[in-house]
Image 1 (cartoon, rainbow, N blue to C red):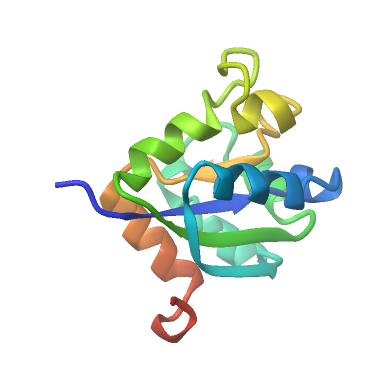
Image 2 (cartoon, rainbow, N blue to C red; image 1 turned 30 degrees about the vertical axis):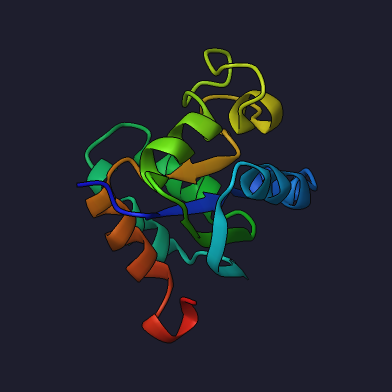
Length: 139
């Protein structure tokens, strides 16, 4: 059964490029309601914990370095069929393969610096949202 919430991060590259507002506008225009949001910076330990699923992959160190180089915007989004609809909105991981009009096609620099993170399952959306937000921060 699909849930109505998903998790996203606007990554350091998109923050550095001044795309927070434009990305949030695309998210809201697509019908998502923001139920939690914060502007923050991941520590090395936080990034390693958040991306622990990739710790055996050769790109893990580069991923941690990238995600800790500057601030991010973390958010929990609400909409019917949230995970699937958000994955469609952000587009393929590689912006060259992403559909026109998607967030990654519009704002990503490369497969490594792809502007946004989006949860890949309802289970991960709940885990990732809880990683960044306490219950009293979600409305």
